[in-house]
Picture 1: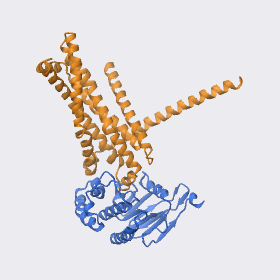
Picture 2: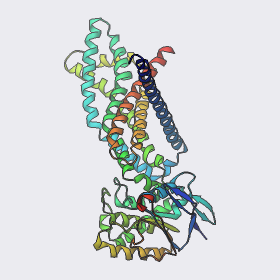
Picture 3: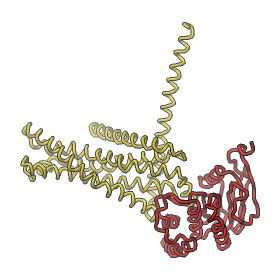
Picture 4: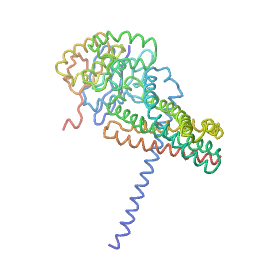
Length: 210
Length: 275
């Protein structure tokens, strides 16, 4: 059984205890935005304090094996501006360069795009996009990757009110369908994802406590 | 007052010495970082994983198109202007000295071995270099580097290496094109204005050419764009999350890229004279 693990770490003035997420579990860390970024940076660094335990061995955060099994949805940052939306969604496959996987992902892309209602926008250049579009691209990429875990950074905040319900139900459906373990990094306990967390840890910075 | 004056003076000197020391340390630190940056890029190049990655090749093809193909009209214009200037300076000078063999020697020494690599290097630096620093800087500011890392994509392999290789490739091809075409165009102009027979001009140029000179042209044509591009990428990566630093990094990248090319030119000239 795979586990997404992290060791105890100090982010500026707060201490995050060690923890893990099992496949299918949903856990949440509630911490301010810049602390989330610190957490994500630590995940991508060499000698990362975040790793994946699998039957095939341990894979540190930032490694290719880790990235193949753990999809990330970052807040307002899921596209490269100079690529098209299609290239953005296929980027992990185009980088890995395995022809069979590229073919499978390319084949699955139209269906995923239809479900996300972005089929006609696929060949547009990403440029500057709304938070909603960033979240959709991140979700679409995860649907193509079929990962074991998802790390979601405040995906539901900042989305236009009329799109929130639609995205919430879409997100929940995809998470249930993929059966992934979710680690949700949120800046608010009312982040609006409607996920059923088995654990939610809240941290506040010294700045906020003042 | 007379008692405090030496103290004030020595304090002033020590603060100046401290400033010089700090600047030297910063410079040495920057040189060390730049060296590591180039080493990491070269290691990534030698591992050759990038060849089998379509995403990396796409970036490289786009960069080659922007740096090489789209700059052709500008290079053509420079070929005509520089070719005309060079032949109309050299041919009358050689005639004055009544030594036609000087035409080939001077054109090879000045236009082919010195001007062509420098002009193309400066041109690439000014046209594509600024775009490269700005693009890389903006990617860092928007947090796209974190997105790439989260997908297990190497920043060096995806962002830096394709641009670096495209600069080297385009620099080499454009330099060779510039050197050859400018001589050709200059000769055509001489023939058109009845200054000199075209075949005779080409014969003189051929006499003055050497294999070493061609190697030097290719070496400089490859080295200058590579050095300047490495500096531009290095500066672009230093913008971090601060958008206000992008123009500063762009200026630094262009200036240091230019300085590197001049240093390399001086280094090559000195080593050739010593050998």
